[in-house]
Image 1 (cartoon, rainbow, N blue to C red):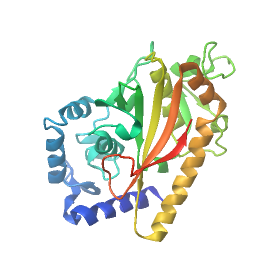
Image 2 (tube, rainbow, N blue to C red):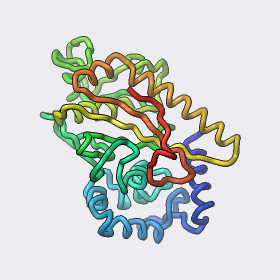
Image 3 (cartoon, rainbow, N blue to C red):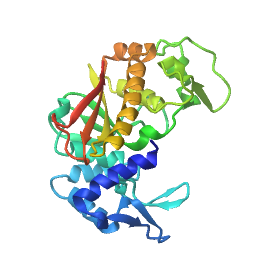
Length: 294
């Protein structure tokens, strides 16, 4: 299954609910229309609802966030629609799943979106978690079609001491700093015997360092995936195959020695879950399935 196939399944499910006329975002500057995005009017209504009294804190977080989720932005091929207008947007998914609370994840109180976890002494934009529930110290990273991207672990030179320095908490051997602006960690270190992974381990490492810097007594990092439920058996089997591969990777990574060592040092627990539903909606016990937990 390709990323575009996955997006088409999500869109087809949505069409069955709200109709085909709700899609096709036209970028104001170029006039180009993107079919896998909600149209301009529908997205404007979505923003209007988010900016209502009930969800205004979420609106402020996304509007001020570094990801430019609510506005047209410049992409590799020119001006693009707002990220959150995409039918497969992970930020949109996170918002819809948790905007009314995170009880399914054991969280109480307000969910904070676009939550930054700064690493001491590290310049630039700090690691951004998609959501945070402060009462239980639950951090959430949401994923949708990103699992179809190919990931390697390429980090900027400024992370070297956190990975291979004398005081690193992953249990990596101390190595002499290499020259160059970046360095790569082999995937096999985390139990992945492939050249590229579905799971973004680089981002995971940055998130762990950011969470550890918050000095919580303990914390839980939840990876929240969206698994569309479909009626066609052939499509459902293809999705199941993808998620079987994802489960295998997640378990390998979560149980790898570096991750186990780091999480033991900082009392961080892992949980990977998926919302298994026809369309993105509030996460609850009936539509949530566990993929891995340590």
